[in-house]
Amino acid sequence: MTKKYYELTPDERLASLNLKQETMTAFQENRTPQHAQIIENYISDFRVPMGMLHDIIVNGQHVSVPMAIEEPSVIAAANNGAKMINSVGGVKAMLPKRTAMIGQMMFVDMPITVLDDFVLSHQNELLAIAQRAKPTIYQRGGGLLSVTTRQVSPTEVSVDFIIDTQDAMGANIVNTILEAEISAFSKFETHLIGVILSNHALEQIVTVKVNMTFDSVGGHDVAQKIVALNHFAKNDPYRATTENKGLFNGIGAVVLATGNDWRAVEASGHAYASRDGQYRALASWTIQEDQLIGELSMPISVGTVGGAISAMPQAKNVLNIMKITSADELRTIILATGLAQNLAALKAIASGGIQRGHMRMQYRVLALQVGATMSEVPILVAKLNQLKQVDTTIASKLLSEIRK
Ligand SMILES: CC(C)(COP(=O)([O-])OP(=O)([O-])OC[C@H]1O[C@@H](n2cnc3c(N)ncnc32)[C@H](O)[C@@H]1OP(=O)([O-])[O-])[C@@H](O)C(=O)NCCC(=O)NCCSC(=O)C[C@@](C)(O)CC(=O)[O-]
Ligand SMILES: NC(=O)C1=CN([C@@H]2O[C@H](COP(=O)(O)OP(=O)(O)OC[C@H]3O[C@@H](n4cnc5c(N)ncnc54)[C@H](O)[C@@H]3O)[C@@H](O)[C@H]2O)C=CC1
Image 1: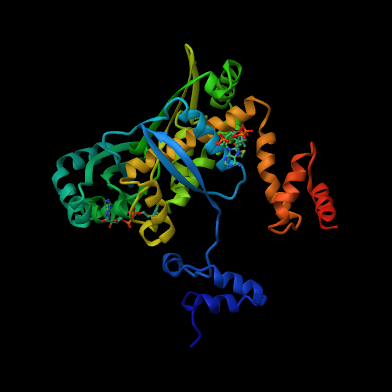
Image 2 (image 1 turned 60 degrees about the horizontal axis):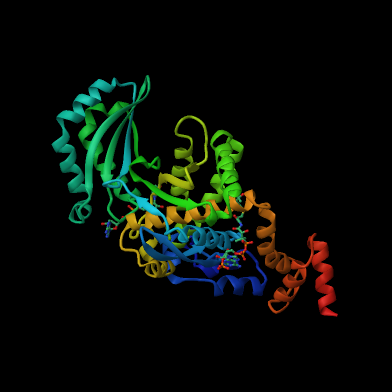
């Protein structure tokens, strides 16, 4: 009997693609046995470069932060932003008393009052069901904290379950509890359309704050321009999208390096950026007296255990480098990296433009694009650095000259 595609081995899947032997070998050499167990139809790993934000001070602690990203200049910028931030003592990070995830039970064509009464009168039963569904999370100090109702539209109501998932990101924990809770709502069965966690993680909002001196960012004029740029991004969704993309350069790179779900973090961040109905900058830069104050608040849904984190050897190594002891600590470091990234980008735009620094870092990629070998890359980059105008034609021509 022929095997289904998902029953094939990674080599059998590759063989079915009629690849050149060298391509086949490249895929085969890029495998991690554990990774074949994490996703479906595995063929190989896709590697992303990882570099270091070598020092950022968060709540007085020096942290080294691995970042996984494909874009040149991001890690240089994170280090640049952190250098400025460290010069004034680093960021102060603040967490809610208890971070938690939200799970939704979604009802249609039912008055909220009926669900309200039901939830209020069945609190003990709902708590007991959660405890039976996921006893291990209770043993670790987490579990269902509260259940509330929320009118979504005239005909739709969400029953929200607030669940402390401790050091796990918690999507599976929440979904397991929610699915168990359905039994308690059986008399409303025909109105219940589904249960699922929400990535609008309003119970996981972290804040980082820094008080910069004007000198630390290159003077009063630069500080004023940073504030003006950020103000523009608070009002203009076009600019806000770009400024937030810059933040996510840093945030996404740490989330990825730690084996966390970057789609969840991005979705919650962008939803939070639109919380008053317009998409705005997530960070805020203001001048107060003789200081430039930077502040960034957003939900960070990550874990240090669970999901694929414990199964991915690299993610575990990254968490060890960071000496992370809890998901809350990881949240603060991710957000601090985002603020450093944002500061570096705004400073570059405010003082001479992004291309100067960004393109200098891009030259290494350009050298590879035009076919430079590893030993030719630094020679070609040094020559490109001396030019005002650079493109692939110029880089190719210079490479030919080097080879003469
Ligand atoms: C590129 C720099 C850092 C140059 O910065 P610079 O001031 O021209 O160079 P520098 O040599 O004076 O370096 C300053 C510091 O940057 C770091 N640094 C410097 N070079 C390196 C390197 N090779 N490797 C690692 N770190 C590096 C390092 O910390 C260094 O301090 P030092 O250690 O020398 O005392 C600066 O121009 C910068 O921060 N630019 C911002 C670049 C950026 O944001 N890139 C992301 C891509 S653009 C984007 O996607 C988003 C954006 C920008 O559109 C968002 C928005 O619009 O808001
Ligand atoms: N919409 C979304 O964001 C969705 C995301 N996911 C995925 O769910 C995964 C994350 O789910 P989780 O529930 O976090 O993982 P998980 O299903 O692996 O659960 C975490 C496990 O770790 C154990 N654990 C050990 N030490 C712990 C500690 N200190 N604190 C808390 N738990 C501890 C818990 O008992 C639990 O069994 C990710 O892979 C994510 O991509 C899944 C469905 C939807």
